[in-house]
Amino acid sequence: MRRILRTSLTLLLSAGPIAAQPAVQVTLVKAGRLLDPKTGNVLSPAAVLIEGGKIKAVGPPAQVSAPGGAKVIDLGKATLLPGLIDSHTHLLLDVVVPPEAESERHLNGKFAPALLLAIVESPIKRAFLGAQMAREDLESGITTARNLGHSGIDGDTELRDAINAGRVPGPRILASGRKLTTRGDYLQNLNPALADAILQQEFLFIDGPDRARAAVRQNVFQNVDVIKVAADVNLTVPELTAAIEEAHRNHLKVAVHAIEKAAIQTAIGSGADSIEHGDEATDEQLKQMRDKGIFFDLTPTAYNHLFLKIMEPSVVLSPAWRSARAGTDGRHDQLYDQLVQRVLKSGVKFAAGSDMCWFWPGKTCGQASVTTLLNLHAAGVPALDVIRSVTTNAAEMLGWQDRVGVIEAGRFADLIAVSDDPVADITELERVRFVMKNGEVVRNDFASH
Image (tube, rainbow, N blue to C red; front, side, top):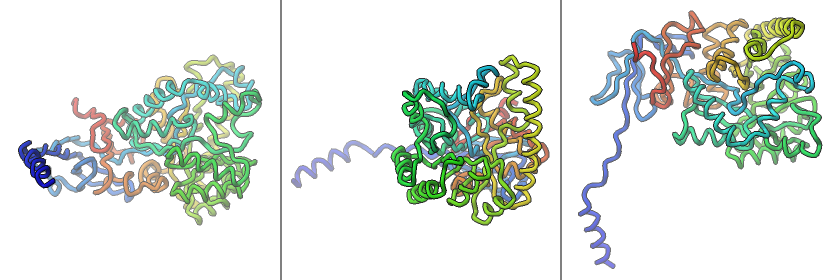
């Protein structure tokens, strides 16, 4: 035995030195300005030292220097910000709004036909769609996204894993798997012989507390990052409480889709981590959310005539429908303006999500998402608070405040840059010219000038 060991050791030593480990990439990014969304302070000029995909140091260029062999990226007078976070999106859904005659035939006419089409399409086709949407998000500066359902059984978890493995480009994804819901929500009046087979591709049903716990466990088995529940008048507090308790036992946050007052109250009473949409929230409910530390995830998706904008380029609209739509949109915008002012006054913590699932002619998914997020400013949210809602606030809501949302030592090197001051002109975020994720440059339009 000793002879065998001596021989093995001799062979190992004679094989030469062990192959050297690849050097860790070190990058220095320099810019005219760096905005800290948390404080609103601006560092000018600024330098960010990145090593191994994480931020190592931030400060004035005189204090943060690049070691020998480091890559230097000089963005000139540009403004650096943390990568954007879309807290509510649907990367495997691309709804084309049908003509009005088709819409009128369905309970939820603008949405249901395309959702059903997505369910019956090939999962592989949807996976390729998701990969395209993820790349377009990243190119527009969205470096983190929370995908909240409508992805098939495993579409978003597999997309997340493919991105993490470097097989396709995209933002960091928190995947929810299938949405938990009660019967009667979203889709109704389906062919009874096929209804369950169709719906089980997108949803897990809650029918009592035990079924709620079982649904969460099914998603845990799929290795999700967050649980999404759709609350309507059919969902009870005991059912939602059971789902939330099971999720928390597995160290997962719960995002609850709740639009009507009753559903919002169910979410509050059950201890939701975030309430999505929340359009009918009362002042008392906002106070309860603030006191309980529940995040309000604002989704200004339909604001500013969204449906007219996405339908006009591709659908013939009758004058009557156009007039009715414009009136409905105007009333919706007024109510949303009022909601935003009440949210700001209440002190409730809020983030923002695009709820992007719509095909917007002439825009990529990322461009459409950023435009939608900026609707918050048009609705009355100050520019700096809009930026916080898609950076620091969103990171806290996701439970990732130690990873993303700020440009600080120890965080992931997820950076974007724009030409001018986004606090003075929030639309600068629609013209992102530099994107870095995990220390790797995704795009750098400054390099061509």
